[in-house]
Image 1 (cartoon, one colour):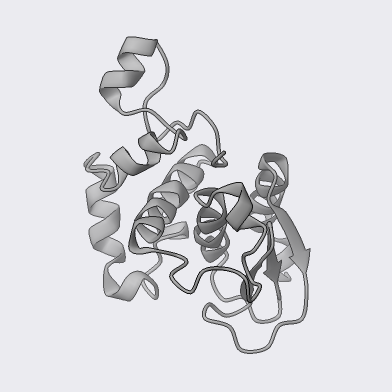
Image 2 (cartoon, helix red, strand yellow):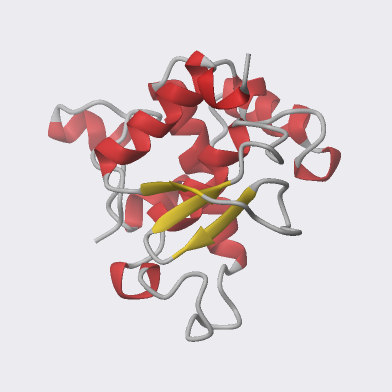
Length: 167
């Protein structure tokens, strides 16, 4: 079965479209992550080169945590040379954990053994222990609530998200 036809991939693509991230199928050359490239408000996917479908969620996380004005510049010469920052990277990792939780996928879907500089198990262990490094940042940008604020506001805490895209 072609990767594009797999249920998990279809579910990811549908989810991204529902939250406002466009997914465009496109033939790609060499990219940092095989078969994936970010563009203005979108993700380009080359299904013939894509190795790990969970990487789609991580890349979507980069778009999701970026302010809209910069999101429109991703993949162009106008985007800051510092993008994504280290904070953006941490936020994108945590966002992708929330997304896989929302989609009811196992953590290994995103945090596969061939990614995250051999730290996949470390991320999974931390997240499953509810040690959400970067949570104050995701909370500050308005995407989710930590336990304390969620309880005060009678809302669901992270990994539930209040919204998926940064304003």
